[in-house]
Amino acid sequence: MKDPKYSIIIPCYNGRDYLRECLLSLKNQLFQDYEVIFVDDNSADGSYDYALSLKRELELVGEFFQKDQSLGTGVSSSRNLALERAKGEWVVFLDCDDYFVPEKLQRINDFINQNPEAFAIHHAFIKFGSDISSTIVEVQNDLPHDFNMLIKGNPIGTSTVSIKRRVILEMGGFNTNLNGVEDYFLWSRIANKMGAWSYINEPLTYYRFIPSSLMSQRRLSYYVNQMIKFSKEARICGEYTETQLRIIKKQLFFEQLNYKIKISLDNYGILDFLNGSWVLLKEGENKVVFHHIFIRLRNFVLFYLAKIFKPLVSI
Image 1: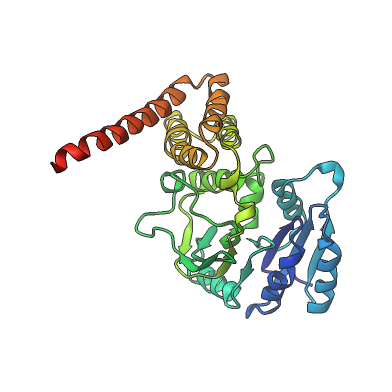
Image 2: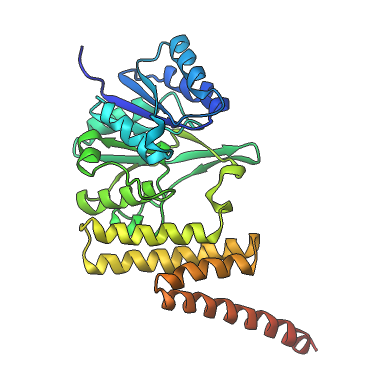
């Protein structure tokens, strides 16, 4: 029996409520040359047993297994375990709370046939959820999706990604020292080493928006720690020039952190900002801390000056 064209990797942790929709979307694919590698991260809601029952009901081909508890939790190690078992020429990622449109694999396959040089592909998606209206999310397409573009933020939704298996194995899979930015780290590494990603400007995945699980609700110190680890791992991997490492640091600690600090102040107040700043100070990032404090003080002064002078201007 020949190996499948695609290995669809699905990590799961307490995702029982979404599994039928997720797995049914695979059953309904127009292109059927695939296997499913489902990894349950020791869920407490019966996800694994339910997934097995759906595998039988939907007659899905592939491996469904639970991760050994000794390996600890985390989506990176789950995906890496699945990569070890995958047999497809291409790896396709799907989070257990998302699902594909029926044309997804067919469209990816057509694109690969038309673009045999492709090695990593992502596409537009449909963002949906109980608290928001469905919205098509497209990525800027007038620039190559290379390192310089991707490092400015992570525009790639994991459930939109297809990568040649040999490429992702050569990269060593996902970095298990990272939690929440492991995909961002790998995507940018691939772009840096291999060149620009291919992009299909068609919404082929439904990407579920769950407010209670959003990373934006985490405390600032969490993001600061992940940015510090990202920067360190970028240096350790030895794949970036000093100029690129400076670009990475600028994007993480100045551009992206500025946005995270705004969320922190809006949601949790000044103490959360100070806690995150303390983490940076312990890492010796004094310049970063002073930069963001200056921005906040400047904005504070300008705000109150505007309040003072507005009545005078109107006289």
